[in-house]
Length: 633
Image (cartoon, rainbow, N blue to C red; front, side, top):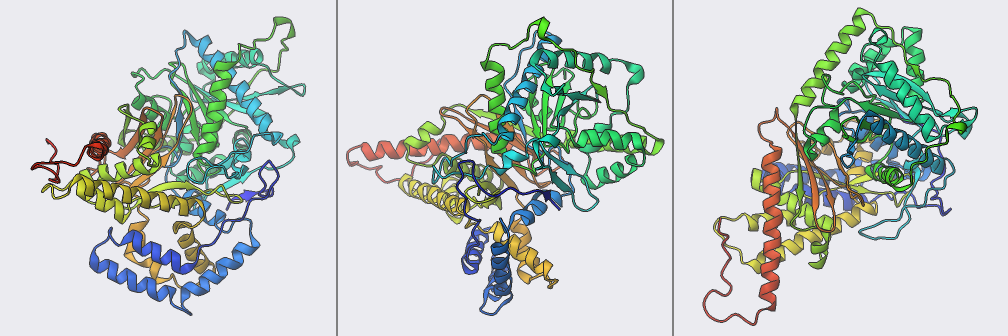
């Protein structure tokens, strides 16, 4: 269960945001049927339709559950928050790296030497302290919605969880603890990971924060301490990269010793983790940097130089591979973006604030975290390392920097860039698989108190009609018919997006109904044990738009073994796509998907170009007018 000391759902400008709405039951059931009809076999759909009608009938089970949910909405700040958090993250037993934790890949840094890399790290820590001061003072400017329904103020609560959250592993479910206490008990130390060792770096000495020069000097001491082979301890961080149940069991074994309990307490109460990574010896292409952020390259590289339970891990590689790794449970990608951009501006913006030698204090040296390991724990470390290695070897990542056009061109076509890209992703998937599948696109519901996300189901019937017209080998469709279908697909996607961000999508609502039935000890309603429901929740395509204003990009792994993760960052004249899948699944290939995606983006642009050219030409005379266009492929 999440444990939190709550603030009210105010934005910093003082107005109280509305509560997340609860959609009408009939509306959700109708939408559900529309979303799944074209994704399951006809026989199966008939069965599902009958089950949904019975569930939603007057006096039926659905009405009872809906009434209970309405009561819950009246008595809580956000009726879906805890249900969603547990379902999406805390109950999930998979390892956090690749499966859950998103990463931000910073621009490649060119460090002249180790000292240069440590200067960058010291600067980054100073930037973190500055940003934390803004948060503590509640002085962050309020975010306003961009894109659809722009201008609405958004809930800022997620920012207040950046530096004071910790995710404890549990045998069946994790616990997210958020300390919202007085600033006096706020963490005043960070943990520095170096050569798989962990060090406590107090950022406050004599009630004054360390300046950049002092931080640099402390980091240099840490590097020295980490090089002392006699004092080197086993790589405990690798345990946090394991499945959550396995890590919970290992943590239980660790806590039997007081030394370990003390070290864990310092780890769990830190502000953030700074990972000073060894050079990887790999060419720093986008794809390589992405995988190194996602899993550290495994136990042979920097895979154990991490502590995945902590919300924020800043990675500074001595070879210039840098970024942020986040536990996703306390906040969404936007928080990671805003903080990353603040830090990049801080690092590159202000002239170096190195203090004069005379004003430098000599703070107490950093302390190494000590661990006591017995043969049992050594065995657990080896098993965790093996499993991390399997995860590393299994990840198939491909970063596509599509630079033929970006969102400026899409806007000129009077289309929503996000909807356009989503339709292109559907076309790419269809090219590879000759079918569409349940697709997840995260939609922010931060317009509401404590709002997190709901799901935009992008595999719409309209998208299917469009991709079938584009891939029809008999070339039965004219350009104007394809264009009409493209506009329909984009409108359907845009309408679903607006429904989702205004709290009217179906996924949170269905989850709420399922959870209320469980709380009432009812037999699981048939609609949730129906095969269609489980198919509709297997997100073979898991997508997210994470836009940055600086040269950096976000990525994550697939959410199911036979799926793709597709994170995209639309810029004015290019689009960055990070496509991930698993090698073990022979039905997926990131390279094949990326090739199909590249083709799809070009084909949709060509279609739009031909259509606008046709619209400006005088009425066609002669033979050829109105004939379907055949591509030269």
